[in-house]
Every structure is written in C-alpha cells, then in structure tokens.
Length: 472
Image (cartoon, rainbow, N blue to C red; front, side, top):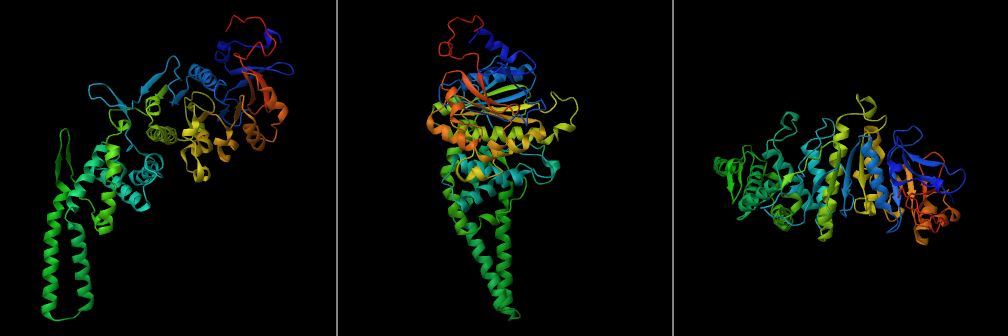
C-alpha cells in the first residue's frame, strides 16, 4: 500500500466535506460524509465497534468538522473524554458543595408549543421519565399521584394551560418537595379523608330521605354548614407560607384537593416520601441552571455521575437534554421554511458516545415516542441530526437502524457479526474480515453501499506500510 492512499487526521475535517479516509479496494477514493448533501438520506449516523476500536476518536474528528461548519452541537459525554477545542462545557458533578459553583438542570422546563405543549403534557412526560430513569419501582398509582403533584406545583407557580402564563418563573424540585411536605402535614390527622367521609354520608342521607321530615332536612343543612366552615378553614392551604433554612414558599392560588382526599391517596402520598427525599438531594438539580437552549458547540460532561456510580442520574439528565433540544428545534418550525439557515438540510447535531445508556430498551424499543426515536424519525424535518456510538448494533432499535443515513462499523467479534448480517443484507463475512485490522472501517453514507475505508490512524504495519507518515 502506498502512502498516497492514506489521509492525515487534519484532512478529515478541514474541507467542505468530512472525510473518513480512502477506500482499501478499487480506486482508493475518499469516502465523504456531509448531511447537507442530497445523496445522503439524512444525517443520522450510527457508529459501532468493540472497546478500543477508535469510536471516540472518530466522533471527535466529526465534531471538529461540524464545528468548522458553524453547526450547533450538543455533546452528551458520559466518560469525560469528548473535549474538543472551541467548546463550551458544563460539568455536572456527583458531589454538591455550597462553596463551589455547580451546574444543574430544571426538569420543569416544558414545551411551549401551543398545539402539543404546556404544563399538563409535560407533567405526564416528566412522571414517565422519573419512573423510567430514576424510580423504576414506582407503581402506577404512585406515578399518577406524582404527576398530579407536578401539575399542582406548576399551578402554584402561576403556570396553567393559559399560554399567557408560560413566561412565569418555573418551579423547582425544592418547590415539589415543599408541596409534598405541606400535603403530608395536612393529611397527618386524616382531615381530608374525614371530610370526604362526611360528604359521602350527607349525600347518602339526602338520597335516602329526599322529601323527608323537617328534622332530617335541618340535620342535613347543619352538616353541610359545618362542612363549609371546615373547608373554608382548609382553604387557608391556598395561602400559606413554609419557611426552612433558605426558602420561603408562597401559594397565591387555590389548589384542587380532591385527588388527595381518599385514604388510599394518603397512603400513596406517604409512600412517595423516599422518592421525594432522594430527588431533593440529587446534585443534578442543585446549582445554576444549565442554559439548554445555548447555540454553538456545547458539551455536557456528566462523567462525574457515571464515575460515582450514579448512572441513573446521568441517564435522566441526558434524556432531559435530548428532550430540550428536540423542543428547541421543533418550536422554530420546519427547517426548509427557515431563513438564514446554516446549511441546506440541518444546523444542529446531538452526539452521544456510549449511547447504550440513552437508547430505548425492552418494550421501549417499540415506543415511537421515546425521545431517541423521535429525534431519529422526526428530527431531520426540523434540522436536527443524531450521531451515536455504541459497542453493538444490537443496542439500536429497528426504527433507528432504518432511519440512519450513515453507518460506520469498526472491529467487532463473531457475535456482533451475526447481528450485523441480520440487520443489513449487504454485510457478509468477506466484508467483516477486512475490519479485523485496527483503523479499518466499513462505511456506508448512502452513496455506494458499504465501503472498506482506511482511517488515518490505521495500523500501518498490518497493512504493509513501514514508512512513517509525518502528518500523524
């Protein structure tokens, strides 16, 4: 092999097209990638290969090229090894220290789309994400109660289904915790449950003694009057103040207490206490809010969470970042209708290494509303692409595999060979045997099918190249 068949690392990202390298066979042409090009189905790109095959290195070179094209890039970094010059980085730490600066996320940020957004829609979404990522043991009734609390905390903050209220200051996890605390205080002596029992008793009396004696009617009227007095007293719940070491919390609107009336509701509310307590101490919610709508090259370094054995928090944070970015591009409308576009087909990329952590698993693989599916199937309409890397293509759902405009396969074992051959009809043992050498990849960008490509860092000795290329 001659040195002319290799490109240097800088050459990958310094042109109008990103260049993977030259083909091993045939005319040794450069294999290019550009989601703005018409010959690509879309920009969604999948990278697979076992550990140590260069997935992260390849991703970083793609990031450099995207940055040179002035694209907005959101990198979700689970390992802390995706740093590229020119980025803005937000480090999310596992340990919270009041004396130090911390970044955090506010899960109450919601989609302001008039047709499909609003606090009620987001409350259901948030309850789903909390259960899936943080509290998988939360039961359906607990989840429903949790969703109701989220909705009420929005209302307490003055945010309702009226879109004119959507600019109000968002509530926080602290507000949710304080609301839960106040509810438990009220329910401590079963006040709401007792009132509900009295109401049921009055209704029963009315039904059984309709048109009865004056004495019975007077008894019913007195009980109704007593109930009204009690409910007025409980109405003070609508304007109360809780004080702790740092917080004052005021409610200026009345909350519908009916969902919390029953004795069963009270027990479920109490059973949420461990979840609420755990949430209140999670570092991802403590600190300065990360500006998720930032334009440019942004990296979210959440390696502190994964290294501290808190992957569930890292997954939760990642899902909210992906949701927020999808919201941002969707709100501006279809990309084809925008003016002053940065690129013909896209201007935003979400990039995830170790993407297994955010990909749908189990039943979620068939859920079209999982955020990874929505980005891959709907994102291109709004100028958003997804680039992800994982150790096995089996981690990708059928929908994600079908909606990928580019696939890059690095060295993998025999088990993965079976996965690849079942996923792509054009993959065979002959092609797979070529990528056993480090730095050789199978690349399909939609132009010529899978091509065998020599990446700049390929093992030269294994390829019969003894000279040293000074460009490396």
